[in-house]
Amino acid sequence: MTHAAIVGWGKCLPPSILTNQDLATFLPTDDEWITTRTGMKERRISHVRGIELAIVAAERAIACAGMRGEDIDLVIYGSCSNDEMVPNSASGVQQRIGALRAAAFDVNTACTSFMYGLSIGTSMIKSGIVRNALVIGVELISQYMDWTNRNVAVLFGDGAAAVVLTESAREAGVICEKLQCYADSRQILRVRGMGTMYANLGVDYGLTRWDFDGQEIFRKAVHGMSEASLDVMRRAGVGIDEVALVVPHQANLRIIDAVAKRAGATPEKVFLTVQKYGNMSAATAPVALVEAVETGRVKPGDLVLMPAFGGGLTVSSHLIRWGDRVTPLGGTDVDLPPSDRTALELVNAIRAQKSTGETQAARFDTLKFAEGKPSGDGASSAPP
Image 1 (tube, rainbow, N blue to C red):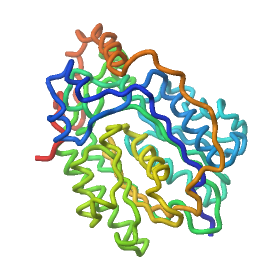
Image 2 (cartoon, rainbow, N blue to C red):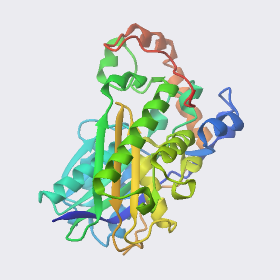
Image 3 (cartoon, one colour):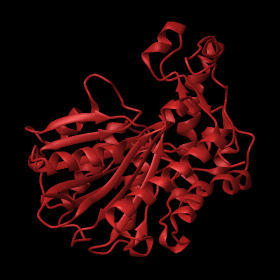
């Protein structure tokens, strides 16, 4: 049986750090309020386009695998904040890394985009369509953030990570997975302003208002991720004691703690990056996985459990058998250009640009959806 082993990994985080104290300069909040509700202390803000983050992460993953861009057969770009829709973003990465004969496409399932892409890439290798694949998770959420809404503005950051998959005769890579979507709850996490339908309202693209029902998201996320995780372990015939590490989507520390408890994982078994990077949507899980490998938390042959959820409301859980290597075969000097502005300066520039369109904000409320009228600015991401 053919498997799809993870043989390369790399991440790219913008250098500019936005702290809780920075957020308090323009939002009615403080470090204690954010930390106690989310576990977050910092997040990154990008000074470059999302595709530039993806390219750096991709080059690092390819070098780690001891491969070249021309060796890649498939590029999967997971994101909900693409720089442009046509042409797709995956083709931009394909061009820059020199994967001239590769297939390339984008996946958007919000925060689970990388995880869904991992399933797709794995399946295409197992079926013999391709021999290897580059799977990327990247987000530039800062450009689409409603920086007036404290309940969401404190949660998200920018970043990217990538892995290289290749065919293997040994059991490695994704050995069991669960993909699901609670479509009846899709309205509880909606970014109004991202999409062609809003042009009919005269709303500038990039001007957004977030519908974010924090309490309902908490309930759905905890139930979905824990049930999916229990399901994949049952089908794989393993118990939580056989899982070396849990690397969950880092949406909120309270969600992570609740999922781990329901899945039977001790706190020591759960890998956290939420305090440093916040929620980077599609980039969150792969960045955490790469960092877990880089810091020695993943050993050869380990079982790694990766539950996630995202807008839609999509849910996933992947049980991954790590291969026999945890050190890179090669490296690269590819990096982002330096930033000449702090994260707060970058955010304030985005806020200033969006303020010119704030008079259009009332138009959001004129649009009704099949699920009912949007609920406005949403609620805290903390549980009830």
